[in-house]
Length: 380
Image 1 (cartoon, one colour):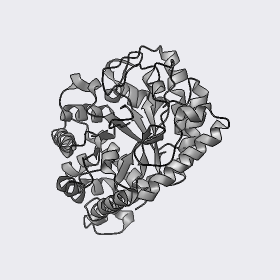
Image 2 (image 1 turned 180 degrees about the vertical axis):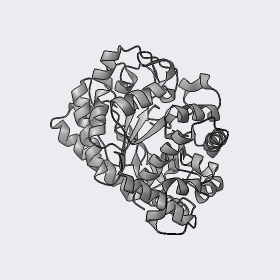
Image 3 (image 1 turned 45 degrees about the vertical axis):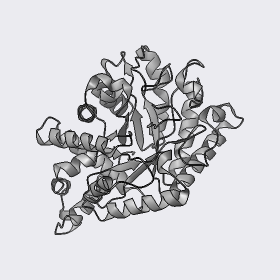
């Protein structure tokens, strides 16, 4: 997770008919004949190339105010799931609105004619990529009188602000339960409280209010970075939290978030020895499939933190990191460096791994279905 002044990253189960509907759209776009009832999901997915399937698992970024031709080409080819926007991409609401409208038009006319995922970090306080709401930080909300109402107001205001310019995914709220004032999340004012139940209640209120505006929320950073003294953007982080404490304190707000229908969960790059002593959470099947999906019952989209984080320094190239994350159960890899080439390297590695059967095809397609279902549910 990145600091406020730097680039940061920081579905409920859909009924089968909805998933089929998503894939029918894809089949129709590819020229499939026959009624929707006769189109099998695998037939629709089979019409997507390995590059298109891999692209559904990559979030791109770019520098400056104008999307570069390489990114536009990828979107038009149906080889990108979405784009994350930072302050250097934004000159004004009107400018950003035009950019996003153009990218969405490109997506509509692509072989994957679904709304593009458009993301940013609009947590409140210091972490706001757009001017305006929500103004208070999570810390300020947690310390306020009527904190639940304040969290609801912040979630609704964030959603309306983002929806106005065409952003449909907010990488918020932070559900980290801090321990000490020197913990990096606490220093940045990005935790509601050191009390687990308070974080769960306020995070759930923010999620529910924001998603009612049509903007998807992202709970982060699972299973919790509240005890970390450093950011995983700048260093490797190992959190030796006993399993009972990890589950009763750090993970508990995610149980509330899942019950509230949060659409995405961001998984952290810290190592949690109580769960997996060797790999960061975002590279661990034990954490993602064992804790988040099986134990907490999350069925939505998982997204990584920034793939270029220093915490992954020992895990090889961009492509290697993307493949490890995808193999562990991350649906979307976040390429937030501002370089389109980073996303291209991740997508290329995923495409090759799929083609060479280095990644399980069934699991790969399951991730693609979740992403397509999320895109299908977005405003056009």
